[in-house]
Amino acid sequence: MAKLAFRLNNVPVEEADLVRSLLVDQEIDFYETTAGRWGISVAAIWVKTDEEFTRARELIEQFQVGHSRAMRDQYTEDVNAGRVPTLWQLLRASPVIFITYWLLIGAVVVISVLPIYGYFN
Image (cartoon, rainbow, N blue to C red; front, top):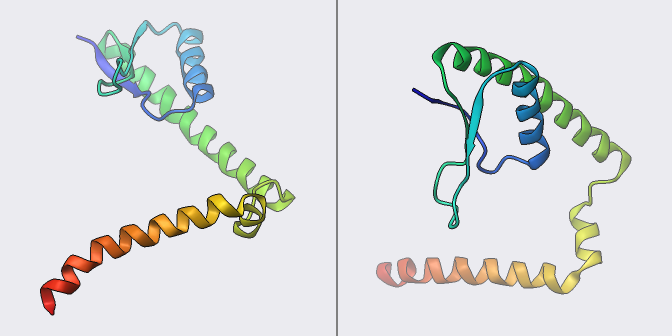
């Protein structure tokens, strides 16, 4: 019976492609399911046999350790090089959008708190 080896929901396309190529290189027989038209199903990579599942999970876990470390290092490098925008840079780039978001956040907080405030008064 097939076993779920790797969920693809909210996984970047590049990472999913790397996992697929890893499984193909190791000659592990797998198939994919999509999230469906409305995105409510499980998008995943499934492995057909128990032996291949164990091997696939080990490979994927090793890959994820290295990949997450590389992504964290890349992010740190981008922050140090100034390629990640700061809050101030975002405000200067699009002040109308920035202020609109903060007004919406404030409105949600007020709408959420007013019933509680009215209950206790």
